[in-house]
Image (cartoon, rainbow, N blue to C red):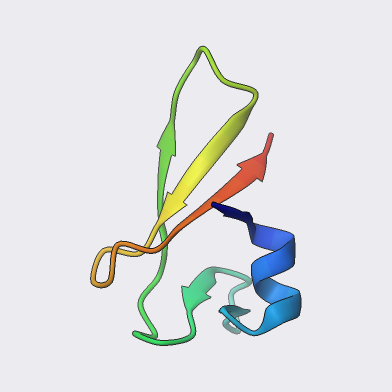
Length: 56
């Protein structure tokens, strides 16, 4: 699982005009899953199930 910053650099993710993270393959907005026991949040593409972690 890559971080969101690495995904942006590699071209796997992009930001739209409202600064939302989008999957480059599906062009869908990523959904966020928060686990209270972890230091990071998980961003998931609803269509292709690609996952990225994001530090809080």
